[in-house]
Length: 309
Figure 1 (cartoon, rainbow, N blue to C red):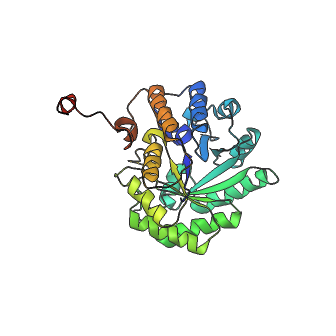
Figure 2 (cartoon, rainbow, N blue to C red):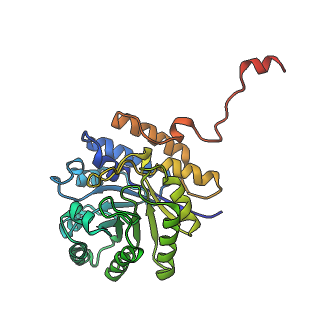
Figure 3 (cartoon, rainbow, N blue to C red):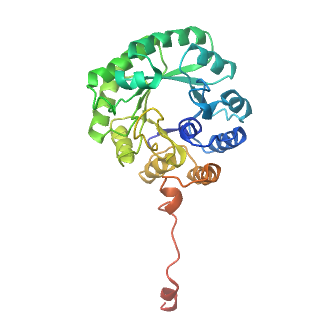
């Protein structure tokens, strides 16, 4: 049975776009629930400026309050060296840096050119040198930009090359506004694995146009073993027009388990966490399996059939 690793990003990517601030104790509660489900990684928060993302202004408190499962890698997004210093002080297992393959989106997102972003990441590595903290590089708009359209493959792969030059431990392709399609996913994934066969590649999809699960399958077909999802299908990028919810973690896990893949995830616990998430945010979520149940959840026949037996 093939093993696929599932990472969840709801505590960062999901909560950052919620209109109401999620109390720190509720964030900690949900991360603790996720820690017991068997997911490989949890993106717990982001050490960005509280002015830029006020929803995550309690990053240090969240990291200090969670009950860490030694089998789980706890990740935080950082924008710069100052964010790296704060993540290091919070004893984060892994930090993720983000640069867009699109110049326009990168300027809109962080007010820097792509080259300037990568130059800043060198300072991040200076801060982390000698620590146990791992590094990951995310390529936003890897499958298309809402301002520039579909980008040349070479432009996307150039970002991977820059991350590899810095010395990251892995790379993630982000489908920032849900523009990916299965053929492009498979082509880019195979290109990365052909050029950098030892580089762990993670795929992060949005379900903006309903192709999220199809894109996950395309990634699996290309040999990718790591996928990010967001509990309940929550989230979206606040700096990208139309970037509605991420692909739903429990829907991804359910699909892969139905197909015989080993995700290492306890789906029942994951669904329970999704139900609690709905209570925390106070509104409906896009996820499907939590509403309809697993395919293995059978029902009793109609009562009138029983009388005919």
